Image 1 (spheres, rainbow, N blue to C red):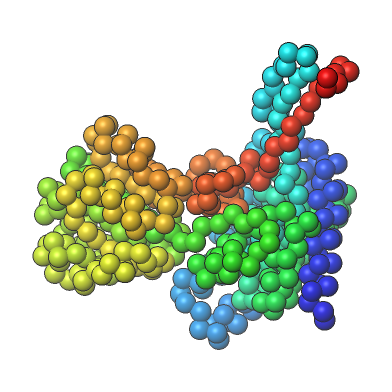
Image 2 (image 1 turned 120 degrees about the horizontal axis):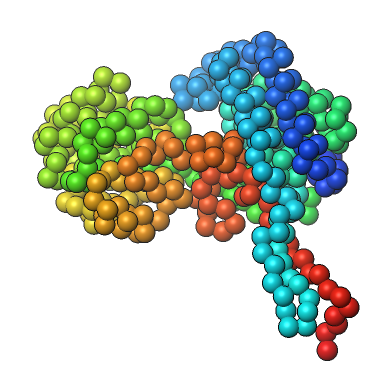
Amino acid sequence: MDIKFFVKDKALEARKGARSLLKAGTARKNSVLLKMAEAIIENKDLLMAENKKDIEYARGKGLSEAMMDRLTLSDKRVFEMAHGLKEVAALPDPVGEVTRMWQRPNGMSVGRMRVPIGVIGIIYESRPNVTADATALCLKAGNAVLLRGGSEAINSNRAIVNLLREVARREGIHEGAITFIDIPDREAIMEMLKLEGIVDLIIPRGGEGLIRTVTENSRIPVLKHYKGVCHVFVDRDADLIMAEEICVNAKVQRPATCNAMETMLVDAPIAEGFIPKVLRAMELKGVAVKGDQRTRELYPKADEATEEDYYKEYNDLILNVRVVDGIDEAMEHIAKFSSAHSDAIVTMNYEKAMRFLREVDSSAVFVNASTRLNDGGQFGLGAEIGISTDKIHARGPMGLEELTCTKFIVLGSGQIRE
C-alpha cells in the first residue's frame, strides 16, 4: 500500500462529503444524527466486542491506567455516545446564521454569515467516543470529518465509523462526510498534515507529545492545547466547606482528564485549618501529595514539590499543594506554571473574584466551581470536539459555532465602484 496516495484518496473522499453537506438542511442533518444514535444503541454488543479486542491489545502493550480508562467502552459510555448525538441534533444550527448586517452610504448591505469550515481532520488517541462526538459536531456544522485514531483503538473506531457511514449513506449524505484513515502507521499522520488545500483544519486530541508532533509538522492550521495544568486557589475569604468539595472534585472525579486540578494553592491565613482536613479527604481517595515547606509542616505525609513538578500534568492521583500569601502570589504562580487551560478561585470576596476573572489568562476561569466543569456538555455546547488554549479563532470548549467560520455577504441593487 502506498500510504501517501491512500491518505490523499481518503481526504478527497472527505472533500466530496463536505460538498454534499452544503446541500443538507438542518432537518436532514438532525434526522441523520438521531438515526446514528439509534444505530449506536442497537449495535452496543458489537461495539463492546470490538472494544474488547482493543483492550486486550492495549494491555499487551503496557498502556498506562489513564490510557486504559480512556480506551474502555462501558455500557454507560456507549449510551453517552448516543446521547451526545441526540444532544447535538437538538442544538441550534449555526450554518447560515447572519451575525450582523449594516448598510453603506451607496445603499448596499454588508453582513457576515456563518458557514462550514470544510474538511476537519481529527487526530486522536484512545477515546473511541471521540469518533462519535467529532462526527456529530462536524456534521451538524456542515463539515466533513477526516478521522485518524490511535492504533490501540482501531477496532472500536472502525466499528463506530462503519455504523455512522451506513446511516449517512441510507439518508442520502455522501459517506465521505465521515472518513476514517484506518491504518496505524505513523506515516499516515505525516501525510495527512501535508494536505493543505484539501483539509482545512487539524484538531489533535491526546497527549502533549502527539500535539507537539502535529503542530510542528502540519502545513494546515491547527487548533490545540498542549496540556492541562490546572489550579484551584482557595482564598482566605472562601467558604471552606465549599472549597473542600470543589478541590476534591477537581482532583479525583476523573484525574486522567485535561481539566483535572494539578495544583492546589491555599491562602496562608487559612492553611492551618484547611490543608490537613482537605488532604485527609484526598488521602482517602488515594491521592499522593507533593508540597512546599509550609504544606509539609501541616501535612507531613507530603513529599517535597520541586519547581519542575508545578509544570507537570500528572493525569493521575497526584497533587501539588502550595501555601501562598494572598491572591497576588496565587496569580503570579498561575501565570508562571499554568497551561492556560482551566483555573479557579474559591472566595466569597466579590472584588477578588472579579480580579481573578480579569487577570488570569486561561481558556476558562472559574469562581466557586470545579475546573472539571470546563467541558462543552457542561457549558451547554453539546459534545465538544476539544478544548483550545489558542487565542485565534477558538478558545475553550469547541462546539458548533467554533466549527464554523464567517464570510462576508453583500446585497446590492446595481452598485459599482466609482
